[in-house]
Length: 78
Image (cartoon, rainbow, N blue to C red; front, side):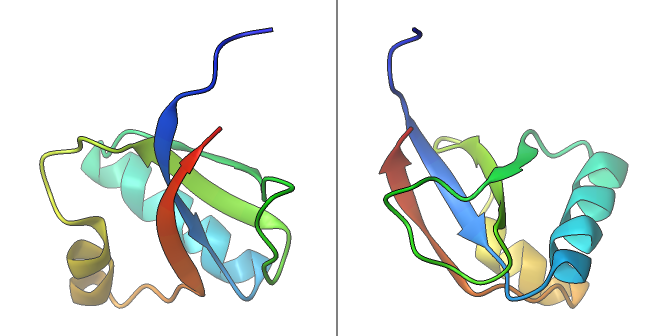
């Protein structure tokens, strides 16, 4: 079992929103991936975007500029 690390986790209301996030991040080469929502988080569609905490930008500001929608975001040990 790998050790838990502090990560930024963004959750979504719908699968469509999660897939839009993945598509935009791949296009912009933003690190991260889609994962099932971790058990300690209660959120919408069951998918989340997880990425390093120390990404050089502000992910929520970038998402807003791109017109991406999210449910919640925070830092979690996963």
